[in-house]
Image 1 (cartoon, rainbow, N blue to C red):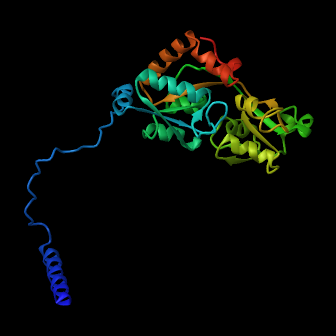
Image 2 (image 1 turned 30 degrees about the horizontal axis):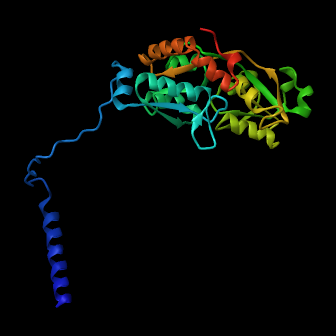
Image 3 (image 1 turned 60 degrees about the horizontal axis):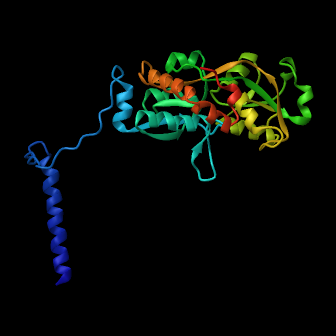
Length: 283
């Protein structure tokens, strides 16, 4: 009996499928409206509307960054810390929202910002023509420069720009360091992060790398993770800024926050914690 009932059920199911296929769907009676409340996806603000309101409505400030000590890096518990990370937390708090850190491909930072994958680029970002063309940028908050890192035992040989010819470099893809090497016509392998570029030199895979001066101060030399590396030539002078979408009112909100945080000592206290106090621009 069980087998007969199963066969009957399968036959009935087959007939249902055949009838559904023949019906075509064009003459189907619309399903009755449900009394349940409709749910809609959150509506993002248009380019001309308030970016601040958009962030506050969704309740989260998404910060695009990379692993870049001493600005952004993870502690032993996997939490993002650093000068930029700590100040981003304070900025989000001032807006009344949570903060979310999202590691991005640095070469795609402006696209991530424009498509609202992130709300801000905050990661020791050098202010340059490309960034200013694609985003609205805060007032500068730190001084920086691009420096050449080499093994300590080779440092005497590479004290001038002219001496760098022939070296194989590693550099973060899309970074200010890559821009400097392009301008000098020097060859390099592009890495995902500045930390990866440092590792290339430490392992002997590359002769040298170009990284931010602030990172060099924290990561190489005696008492650091790379005691056998040092920096020699500084290729330029730069300033760091924080980037928001074009026309974003978050720029004014940030500038006001930073001025207040500098005045009450928060900026310099945080900078001292991470050893970047000498680079902070006075307000």
